[in-house]
Image 1 (tube, helix red, strand yellow):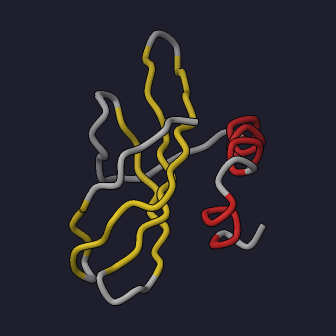
Image 2 (image 1 turned 90 degrees about the vertical axis):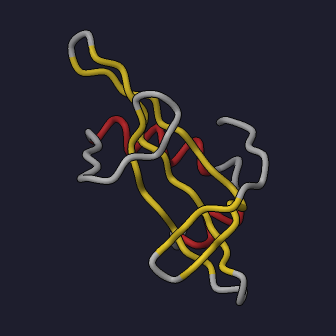
Length: 90
């Protein structure tokens, strides 16, 4: 799990701040990247869950693909982020 500093991000629902985050490191051949799962909170208090991928620390748009073993690792990482875990119904 990566410790994060609360930051503001843009969403289709307006600005939101990051509450919790897990990064699931992945590898495909020689390529290394991470899937990022973030719990966000809008200025109005609504909670959002954002899935993204990153190759250089910046969240990217596009499809996010997890292998079954990566999903298992994500579940273990979520144990450290109780609010994000709750938002995902775990």
